[in-house]
Image 1 (cartoon, helix red, strand yellow):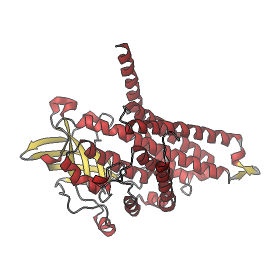
Image 2 (tube, one colour; image 1 turned 180 degrees about the vertical axis):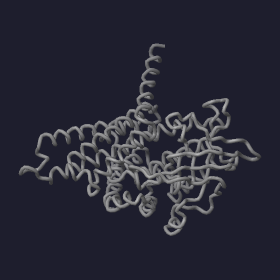
Image 3 (cartoon, helix red, strand yellow; image 1 turned 90 degrees about the vertical axis):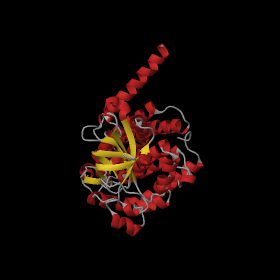
Image 4 (tube, one colour; image 1 turned 30 degrees about the vertical axis):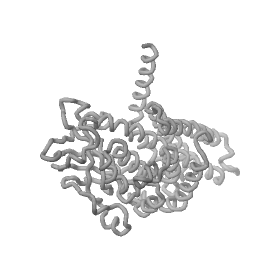
Length: 406
């Protein structure tokens, strides 16, 4: 991995690792049990600059590169995936579309608030009838004097309750199909207003909140339980023209570009879960004794640990290779899908083996591998299912073949 990391990367890795072990590990189990958003740690992460890592200092960010950002996701997820997805969803999904496609005025209005972590962002694409079929959106935006009237419901939205700034997709011209979808920036107050004001993070009075945008039902999830996931409901929400993000009709291709980057983030998160499960399993195997010896001395356990470690090393190269391509302005869509596919399925395999190594203790909540196994499953679903990743990879291979033959 030395190919990808320099001394600055290692310094960031060590800083985030210490934060995760000292601040997150002691509270992760209880936050998971209560399904409680980690506001106190979000404030600390904002103060460390972790909520604006890849954005320029001029916009209030830390000015770090893609690899630094993904190292952060990776290290946090080794301890708790909910904290990792909080940063990933806020940064890649909620903030990056405004950085990539926003006007100078939009960037100046929103990015300093988001990069500092003063408010949280979200990304509204998925709907009850539009999951893998991103082009099947039923949310509509109709022109009105000075703006648009948006109606629709988005589901499974990370930060749907706690967040205040969202990038959402809506159909602006049904007859144009995928070219008739447009991106909008919408705002609403956080559902945790009292907590946000107490901590001084999570709310900005100066945002022009849009009437008709509100949080819906909070989901009671199997994993990522300390992450906020809800519906985002838009009812006759008037969105001014200056909140159109990018060109009218360019929403879907812009969202797909955002998802390419998001897949590397999800891959880094899944990699972190897998590596955290391996660390827990190694420690347990060297402590637990059966038949008069440590279970780590049994070949069956050694084989499981060896398979886990080998998969993790392979995933590291896939994840950071995709990150290197993105950072250097090269095509990375296929590599992002490969990294996401491999790392997410690895996380599920690895956490399953980790529970097996722990035996009956792995099935109870006193040990982190139980939570890690629950947290791993969504990695095979979010940011495009494993099946969708295989389709994207295969289509990329076919395009490459057709290009050579042409």
